[in-house]
Length: 200
Length: 252
Image (cartoon, rainbow over all chains, first blue to last red; front, side, top):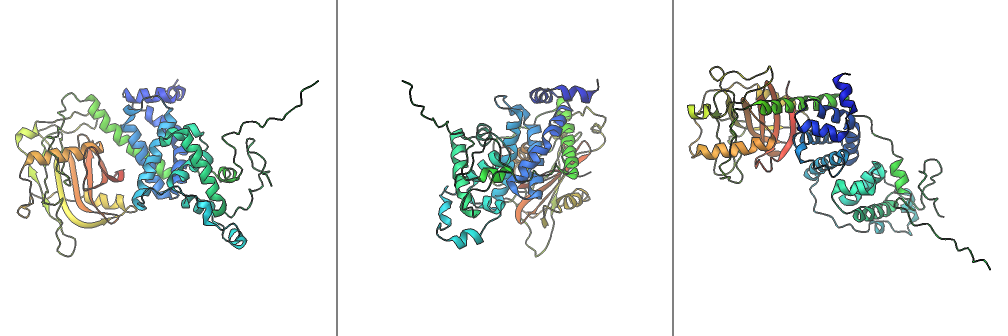
């Protein structure tokens, strides 16, 4: 069995241990396994391919150098997610330094009686996400777009799971007027099995 | 008599989303896989980091560069322990770094050759076949210049390559008052910044006090085991907070 095959047999935790013990190839295998997912996360978070490239490169380098800090309580992927998210947010905050915005109820932005507004002014999904406070936006990116569970997202963002659920709920509610959604969209073609039927 | 059947609502799932936004977001197209150029770039960075790590793992003669503890905010200083001699470059002013305000890009370079004491202080031994030359042959060199070069993210690698290729000039006297009064302070600050960046055993270091994306910055090109790596850091670079503005970029 070749060296590459040996590495393929190892779990992420085993690869981390091997890396910390000095194995020169172990981290490369971790990179190969998770690079696409971390890249997707960086793109979804930054919406800027150049910034995403810088962020994900720094994240993997940081993970390489600070592998000793991986305590093992969480999954390796969760740990990598956290490093990538922090790398992205650091860059975003440099470009758009803003104080922590209160998580206001953005549903008040659109007048519910202004039908013209709700139909004509419909933000692109990504533009709408940009309007959200960082906490809500990251919760939706991780849970709704990236597919993490609320528990995993809570670990990545280092907050309580209840906070993630709250941010998701408020973020989705805030997106409705921004997207011009008078009623929830028809989910018949792409709703996940867990999605409830939209009520009239 | 049978008890009436009272339908019980199932407990709400955490995934319930009456707004439909979750379905919208989850239905967005998945980003494409990591582009090939980025895979190669990260591979190169990891390989360079691995070379540095291999050198530090195998060395049994490395003398850690210990910070004196006297860290002055706003100063970026670094010291390099090379394979042979150590040459310190200090550019220190009352502020952080003074850039010559002569209406254009000007450079000042200062290099101070250390004494034999430092030369023997740290001689890391590389495990790979890219071992650093013996102490009697190539000295380690550091050169700092002050320019008003506007480094950009898009052209960083190209601009840094020019910095790394700059001819190491002889020591030039700087304006009075711009040299550290204490080489010990200089070494401590320099050590902190490079340590914070994870740079170990660099033999040649070029640094440029300039700007990165419009922000005052220090651009560093450090050559370790024949792999030049470029960094952009804030001028408050310290071990605890290297303030990395542009990630380590290999310059093959």
